Length: 149
Image 1 (cartoon, rainbow, N blue to C red):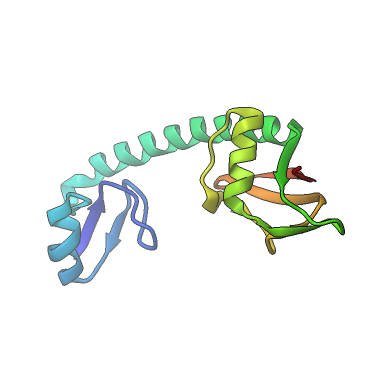
Image 2 (cartoon, helix red, strand yellow):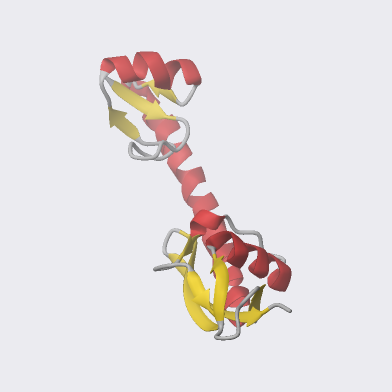
């Protein structure tokens, strides 16, 4: 069944896309939830309008993300954590800790899922992590882990 998506569905498509899905998925999920409409030949104009508005919104969001990337990369992000005498932390610095430090340093709110680290930080010192702000816009965050007294 061909369905015009009214909202973004992860793994399926974005708003304004006409996708071919199984009948049961369309009848049981997409149509009742309002996430899609059964596509007809006369919906081409509506689909084009949805895609145009989506593209304009994406362009403005990308521009805002570029500004945020510049602010985040220029900020000094400091995380204080309890550490032993050798510099090893009691516990570790996680994505949530880094998000809180970024919010404190720059007033930019990110979700912890946007922070990408190879592994949690377990030593006092500096480290580099990446923050996926928007599709195609990734900021490099320099994090300084200090010992909390």
